Amino acid sequence: MSENFGEPISAGAAPRTRDSGELTLKFDTGFDLRRIERLLQQARERGGPTPESVCTLNLIAIFFNAGQYERARETLEVAGQIHPCRLVVVIGDPLIEQESLTASASVSRSGGAITIERLVLSATGRAVRHLESAMMGLLRPDLPRVVFWGGRPHGDLMRRAVESADRIITDSGARPAAYLAELAKLLAKGAPIGDLAWARIFPWQGLAADTLDLPNLREHRGNIRKARVVCAGAVGAEGLLLLGWMQSRIKRLQIQILAEGESEAEEEIVASSTCPRPAPMGLGQVKALEFEAPPATFTVRREKGILVANVKGDDDGYCANRVRLPPETPGRLLALELKLLSGYDDLYAQAAQAAAGLLASVRT
Image (cartoon, rainbow, N blue to C red; front, side):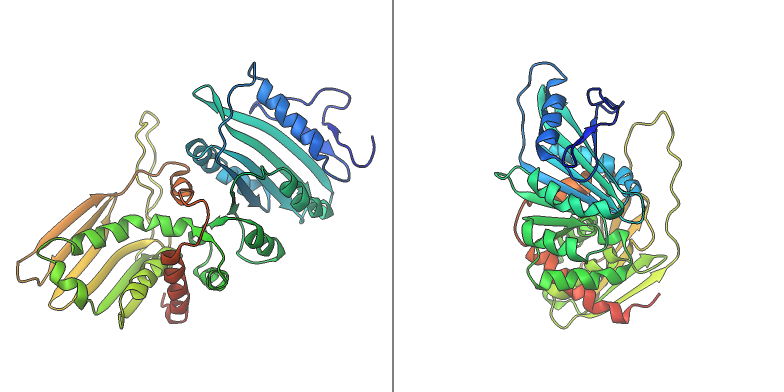
């Protein structure tokens, strides 16, 4: 075998098929893109005559070990079904000393059409240097590029992703709150970043806005003076973004963020139940939002799977508003962020930069 060409893992045989339907090749010193494209074509044809293929974007998922990918796999699959794509997964683990290069190809079908073309590139040791060029060579040039970033928001690879991607999606809620400062620096330079933590607080923003839009409460919209966010167990990115959103929208707002109580324990799922439920309140997620527009006080708090808004002190009397949190299904948040395939989310950028400014005043 030449140094530039791969061979099937089962030496001398056709690429093997895993239970997942993947066809796999192993390479020695470099990825051969033409062989990987042929492998993808074989995956397309395995279901019979090549059906129609629907593809709206390149979805690039970058991880730094196989465990990260396995945890995010279902999310990527579901989001890819909602937004048909060529999914290119890059797994680079430099902590494993032994060098290895593998590529796998598979497709997913829906309604008789191919909706996901899936390519997984894995490398360990010093061989990770081959990943970037292979990834770039396997993208469809006529479609937007969206990067789902599974690591910390810094480093050379992140910088190159910012330069080449139409949009970058991360999850600041899965990292310590301090990483918002690094995201804020990238946003200040115009990086087109989206954030699953931002999508996670949409219900809080929506209920607060809807309550203020009630006819008898609109008089308070221009008089909000103080805002406070309570997080579960520790101050997290979601709470900082929610408070940053309010601070970026309201001038001269006095703000406070703190942590109280504990996160909710994962509830045991009854095997016979197929009804999805809202995700439990995780460590650092928002527990309550309170803001004052004298003489009225608005409180939004979470009660299990429901957000409850209360208004006290208004001359029209006590008011309550409720909304059920959306059921937590894999890929829901990523699919929401994928609705914007390119461009700069000004509202998120302003909220994230305001949130980064709050980090110094965080009290736990």
